[in-house]
Image (cartoon, rainbow, N blue to C red; front, side, top):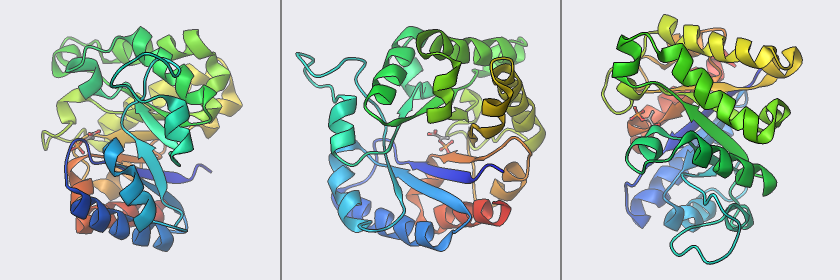
Length: 253
Ligand code: PEP
């Protein structure tokens, strides 16, 4: 049985005061949900605030980005080693905003994935198709290509130390959620692709769904057999909404 995981991605939002109150609320729900893991992914400059507000809580601390390089002359970047030393447990790689706005290719995403693993971080590998790709029937090919890039770089066995997140780009921040059946179909596809390498591993890897998850739709998404929790954007900025989503995961856990 896979334990559900809910991660709140704050993106580039909030102040230090907000970070403190959002983290305190998330730490409280993390402590109250014995059947599910909960984490928050603040902007990197707020990591210390979140750490202080969630001291001795089971809350996972995540980062939104990581350098594709080890320490060195890369002005403006933050290495996986630095994140690990700052108490970070997991890091997003391949989020659609990084792929689309910042032009990160599958190769760059795979390099970041490798760096994260080498530093002992859990990469949260985001996969997902655009609306145009879905409409021309390319969803499966896109998601499998994105997955294959990290398997080529790090091997399928590396997935045992990773979390996957299926995030259809057309559902991120749009209010348009994938239906439970649409999410389940792609999650099952991802799991069966991993099973071709290792059936046991495929049954253990957690695959989160992300894209306009709210308190009102979380339970039906999390009830799908291959949906192991959520990657939550907008709703993670509203403690009552994030709380409701985490409790839905806990119910299903
Ligand atoms: C995200 O940022 O990964 C995300 C899923 O955002 P939202 O929940 O706002 O759609």
